[in-house]
Image 1 (cartoon, rainbow, N blue to C red):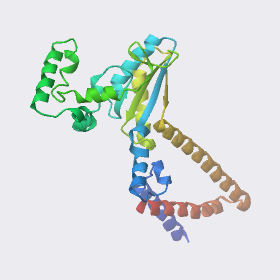
Image 2 (image 1 turned 180 degrees about the vertical axis):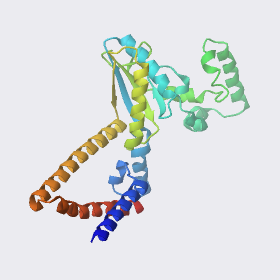
Image 3 (image 1 turned 90 degrees about the vertical axis):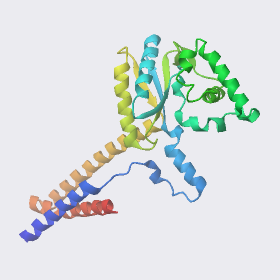
Length: 287
């Protein structure tokens, strides 16, 4: 019997090692949704998790000093643009680099320019002559780095056409809410919206950048968006699961102690439960 007990415990230990090495816990909330059957359903499911709307975080910096909030907004946007966890950040500043480079290859397909003009020698000559005049203007510093990539400035035309009819008000050259007390920013994360682990990394990077950029200790950062909600749901679910699991284990131990009044019997009674749990997790990790 002693050898059997030792072999049993060793088997449970091996199962625990297998679980630790091979079990990967998925955190994509789309796994709870029905499997897509049509191309339209697959597109919808992909956009829910991977689309730009699901990656967007809305940021608000509030405090008693609007100037300090604006300065922090500029410093925070600059820090996040160089952070690998974020794709794009906008806060109302006129930053030419804010236009995504991924649109560059499709600028003539998206722009209405070629609907009424032919991309011929005369068109290119007239555009280049305009760029020469632009380089002689005060805007030369802004356009100089952009002209080799897009000499006809199609992306600027697209950005201008996509401007909404109504925007947040500008104070100190950055976005503010209607009350003028909160500086507003929009950030797009690289992690999918329903990837809590990736969004947790982005949230940590955002908090570190805010702490470094904050110009006044009274300033506060509020974050909203699908990614922030997924992190909140994961943390709440894990906290409640740990609490309920602890209560269940304590309840089982007390019940077995009351029933058998023996620690050895208690250990033998818990061993099958631990074995079953380890076997189930190991089987799940092997699939």
